Length: 295
Image (cartoon, rainbow, N blue to C red):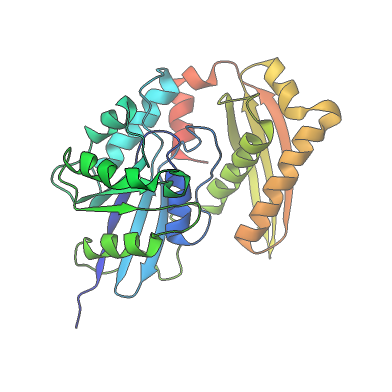
């Protein structure tokens, strides 16, 4: 009888290489928010994949920030380091055809005592496919990778191959979670993330990162969830951007987030949203710590 395998696997890489999209594809549902903006992920988010004879808890981490300082970015980088220190394996995600100084900084963090798999993402965007093999050979000489798997997280290409490579390298042991679990995060946390994702997607470049979401109330009445959230910004001018003309933009954020929650939770959602100004929240160490711990 084949022994069951189970373990935790960190997904790491520079900002905007597609880590959250990869996590969602591996798990088969959206547990981590995505957008085209770098540094969308702020938390250590676990997505759970249970297969025949294995269970993997994938840990999505923030993109390791090398270009900007500040309290928030230092805290995000600390999340990455702590995640790598406490896993059974790691996926190092890079973009096909691109390996820069910021990727090098992440490479230096990789644990030498754990299997690390190189995941070359966005292969569908590589115009000259002949570049892929030399690119793989170049990176393979920089670290003792346990495996190298080119994928397209957006299109689902090579995801089964990656899953097989991961499962084969998990330690022998019983499942860490229930067979139906897909994440270790609470519904309250997931609700806040859906609002933040909707804001990032609908605000474009007008409000890059100066936005946080706090859940004020989360009540469950049968299959109905009543959720009250506050979107926090640093300046009054940002508050006006989030609200939009006659409240239309805030209404659109709430509507998009509510639809995502109803799909995720499998029931009706009543969502109320407000916007408040909290000057300097991204440099408030105590607030940032509470923010990263989740609502």
